[in-house]
Length: 329
Image 1 (cartoon, helix red, strand yellow):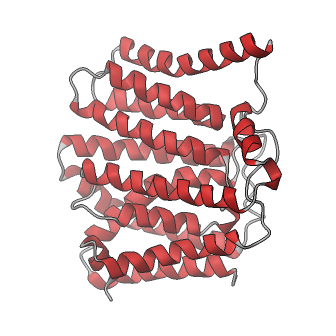
Image 2 (image 1 turned 135 degrees about the horizontal axis):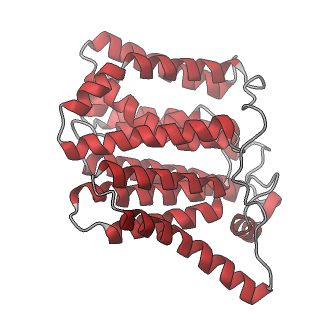
């Protein structure tokens, strides 16, 4: 079976096979004794409230199922954006499937986490941001995107840095008036003003627990990772570097609207890498990295002309994913 060719044509057997590979590690997690929800360290008050409703550390299979559902929702939203705005040549399920496979490579993250709530909102904010490029009056869109981003940061405070994504969209769209930037800041700040004000009126205090948006004193500790992690990282780096001319060609050969959206993905990738390397984030930031990577990988896979190279790279990635899930390294 030629995987990429069948997925590009949305053939059901190929899609079912990839979904099976992506879901198997979650099935293993559902019936294991691993935690169903992340409750270690300091988390935001809003996330603590949600996790408390779900039972906190005692939340098991329900939280795992909820986490799986949220990951699938994110995959669906990624497909919706890439297909609606033609970020790739033809409509395809491949971006969402690749996102699921990238997450499947990190079975230790298969639990409910604050970043999952924030990530769903980040993607919704992104869906609004891409509209900035084809609207003459975009102040309302900017405000709404920043407002949704503000809600995302209530769950996962480090999402505040994704304001840079909105700023980049404003700048790339050539509408970089000071007023538009201020509207973005107001939209984001409105959420926090309402959140802090309501809590102060009801409880007489400001809920600042878990709001840590600083930077760590040392680099991210990669030494604790196993070989499967390095295999994945090396493959993704080589694929990205090797296919970079293909991605650039895809950008330059498309309409300006599509070019701007793909440029925005480079900003997203930069933000996520910086958060991984120097912020207080941990492995969970992989959820952020997987979004632009899934789209860039799609562009590479569908534009590589040599069928054997394309299918060979795809099978290597699939093999790494399977090995990660079985902990053979």
